[in-house]
Every structure is written in structure tokens, then in C-alpha cells.
Length: 324
Ligand SMILES: C[S@@+](CC[C@H](N)C(=O)[O-])C[C@H]1O[C@@H](n2cnc3c(N)ncnc32)[C@H](O)[C@@H]1O
Ligand code: SF4
Ligand code: SF4
Image 1 (cartoon, protein in one colour):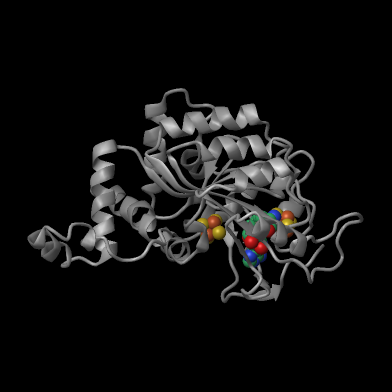
Image 2 (spheres, rainbow, N blue to C red):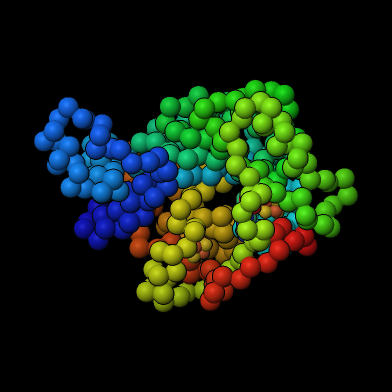
């Protein structure tokens, strides 16, 4: 990795780990008996200190820490949100990812974990995750992995969890993201929002969860997607302020930048730049080669997918989860 690559790696990976990391202050007071050391540590802000620890860890392991990775278990969904950030309603029968089996999930995860240091936040997402028959087995397996520090699933609340899944979710590493779509109209026949019931189940079982209940009741209009080649400096700025830099995706064995890139990778003709950026963990045999490709994945000034992505100039707010 040359100096330029390392600068990008620092921006897109080492610094992001702290931004994603929500634990509070207090790194310096970890050694109260070592006065000199504490004085020295107090010269750093926790962010700088954390960065230095992450950098040292990276130099020793030569494997990437992934700040956030979402594993798509299916692109099928019970809802049809016009401005879904994964563009779910616009997949076709040919481009949809059907339900991932436990065997496939285990094989992907085992392979990935050999090639990275750890994942800070690992999500099982969709589409709608609860449509997947093997979800409980997958979650149990993910929670058993030392290299997955926090595990979450994100759901739209249209399907209630089974008693087995509830049991699995009672784990200190786990958090559920429950969207509040109670006000949404125009749902498909037989689909209802079970937000209140779902929330009660979580509370009664002491399962950690967050909801979008008290947040802004809005969605953002998604960028327009089409094949394009844009100016590099524009893309660098676009990428650096985009939410898409925070959470990477793995879908059908392929690691890509953001939720939009999953849709792009399955529905568009891909540029050579994109083909060079994505990491296909099923194709590549050697764990060391996958590890190097993942490091390279973060050592870029922006994502090649950004060429295809045309956001609105200012954020445009629309009603939450408006249906097609
Ligand atoms: C892609 S969804 C997957 C989980 C589940 N299907 C759901 O909708 O809750 C992940 C999160 O992104 C949010 N989301 C999806 N599209 C969005 C948009 N256009 N603007 C803001 N948030 C969005 C959802 O509300 C949810 O909290
Ligand atoms: S429920 Fe979630 S995944 Fe499904 S279409 Fe809406 S935003 Fe997309
Ligand atoms: S393609 Fe780039 S600009 Fe578009 S959402 Fe993803 S990271 Fe952001």
C-alpha cells in the first residue's frame, strides 16, 4: 500500500471505526496507576487515541477491521417502499436474491472471518429478514462468532418473530432495529404492520432494540441511478459526505460499498472500475488474497459505484415508506 492508499485507508476505515463506535470517554483512565502514562494519553483526544490503537492493530494483523457490514439474506420484501434505500421494489424476478440458506451463510461467514480482523457492527438485513426460513440458525451462528462484536437485524415489523428467534435475540451482543411504519397505507393484501405487538414482545423478553418511532417520520429521496462517468473531485466530495460510506454490504458473496451498490451490482452493466473494486469471497480461494482485496477495498478515494449515483442537490424529504 503506498502513501496515497494509506491516506484513503485511514479516512475510509481506521477513522470510521471510531465514528461508528459509540462507547463513551475514559480510555485514558484505564491506567490510573500510571500517572505519566495518563498525562501522556491526555494529550490525545479519545478519537486520536482510538485511531492510534486501530492503526497499530492493523499494522500487526494486516487484516481489516470492518466498521459495519450488512449481510443481505434476501432482497424479497413484504413491502414496496417507493424510495427504499435498497431499491427493493425495483429488483426483477431475475435479479432478486432469493432466501439464503444457513449452509450458504455459514460458508460465507467462515470464509470472511478468516480474512478480516473483526466486524464491529454486523447486520442481517433484507428486504425483509423475517421472510427467511433459516434466520434463527443464521443469527445464532453469527452471535457465536468472537470476531462479530455486535450483531443486529433490521425489520419492517410485518412478521412477528418465532419463539426460537426470541430466545436467540436475548443476547448481550444483539440489537434489533424495528421500523415504525404504523402510518403507512396501501400495503399489499394480507400484510399488516405489527409494530406494537412486536415492540411488546421485545420489551417482555428484555431484548435490546431501537425503533424509528421518535425519529423524523420521513424518508429521503434516493439518488437517481444510471451508468455514467463523473468528475473524480465531485465524487470524492459526494462520497465523503454520504451515509453510504458508513456501512458496507455483502450480497450473494459479493462485498460492495452501500445499499445502492447492491442494486447497481445486480441490475446494471458494470464498469471495469466497479468490477475491480468489488470483492467476491466465493470466487476467491485464498484467505490472504481476500484479506488483501478487502484492505484495497477501503484504500480508495471514493467508491466506483458513485459514478452511477446522482443524488438530489439538497436532501429531499418524503413521507416515510410511501408505497408504490
Ligand atoms: C433497507 S431497511 C431494511 C429493514 C426493513 N426492511 C425496514 O424497512 O425497516 C433499513 C433501514 O433503512 C431505512 N430506510 C429505507 N429507505 C429509506 C429512505 N429512503 N430514507 C431514510 N431511511 C430509509 C428503513 O426505515 C430502515 O430503518
Ligand atoms: S420495508 Fe424496508 S426493505 Fe422493504 S421496501 Fe421498505 S424500506 Fe425497502
Ligand atoms: S454510490 Fe456512493 S454516493 Fe451513492 S449512496 Fe453509495 S457511497 Fe453514497
